[in-house]
Image (cartoon, rainbow, N blue to C red; front, side):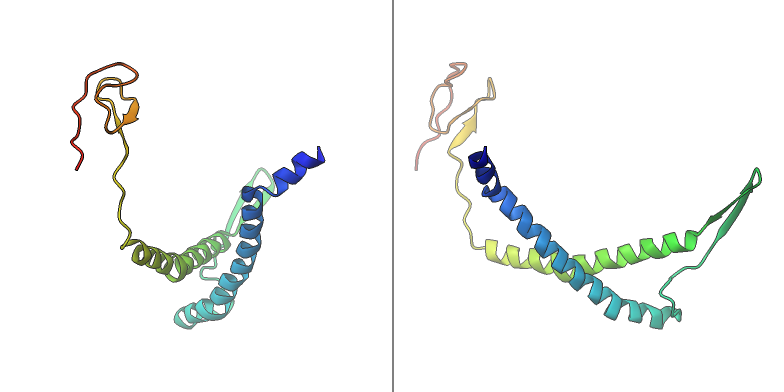
Length: 145
């Protein structure tokens, strides 16, 4: 049983997941700091609000001698904060990484496939096959260059 546990722990998926969690936690603090210390003061300078809430609003409801208070302003502020953080991550992390990957991949050549689909039974067969191994249909052979 310990041998199986060691095999499970040392499998690439578990190690990759552990690394992703640690890097994600560190990345979370970087993004939170960026938004808290840079983006939020910019927004506060534009809106003129110093408490960090973009919208303040409360909805009161009385039903059968019960009083309910809904802070819809907090919900809107949290949703705006989420959109700001998502925008920061998208424009400052995802877009540059996508551009770097596109630049790295533009010189790669695409290999020709070695397999094709049989037009009769749709099985995957070698590209040079003259007859399907599954349904024995006669195929047109592509001439090798």
